[in-house]
Length: 369
Image 1 (spheres, rainbow, N blue to C red):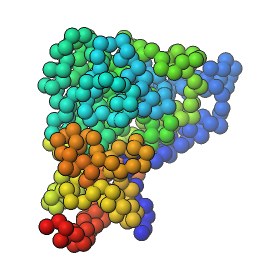
Image 2 (spheres, rainbow, N blue to C red):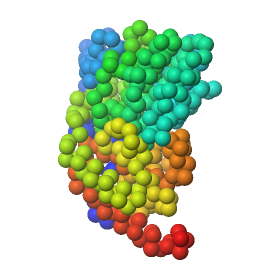
Image 3 (cartoon, rainbow, N blue to C red):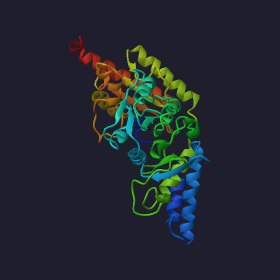
Image 4 (tube, helix red, strand yellow):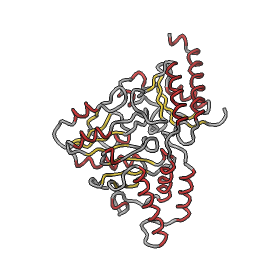
């Protein structure tokens, strides 16, 4: 089988060396950031330096604050907790399950066939009376499609609303400027960029300080109770600093593989829209997702059928259905690259996938006629 090829960074990216080093330094030091003795003060310094580094890394210095959480899901839940002060809630049809799980009775804003939020449809939804709370992804976790968040923000703020942005999959893949997005809050997570699992953050505009979801003590300026994960937070900041622009070689390799796949009749979901580098969602109408996954896994290649937040299940993609392609919703495969990926890995993926499809067609030729 050879070496395992990991192409599932959108699910979780392996711990970066820089993050591991920062994590171990903090673990070895010890100390609780709420303690007033010398080790407590050192832990507090690590915490605040990490907070400032992350705020700087997402363009929020001067206008934003940051609450550390246990991950992107909690950050989204904390943001949606603020919807209680608004008259109605709108979420895009492409949102992560953690958004849908944090709110009930939301109005759904449609997607275009390209996978982007339909801004004209959103504008129509916002014509009702009252102030809206709106949640829109920056980059979709399955297709990588980038939404025009800044344009949506102008529509939402004209109605006195709050815009929350789930930027978990965008972090580390594209430059994020919180100020330019004009968002009121933004969720990010460490493990998507090689910073370790169990740490995330909600960035917020200081004019919209969030009310705590988890209460009981005064950590994080009273916005999130519980002892901070100092080592994990240090690793998060170190991983973000280590993120670099995706190399031209890697982008070129992805583009070449996309072209080769299209020549085989494969559908690239979201190909009409701007996408983050390193996420490719393909679908082949006559080859089920679960069979593709089994074939790739047996060849030593780790990919997924979409969102990793489905308890290990392979199920039809809600995002693909909402893009108007229910026929492909259980035929997809997501390939996602990261800091461990080499340009030649794309070719290995293509060789294994295309060979598997060729064999599959031969075996099922009569059924597919």
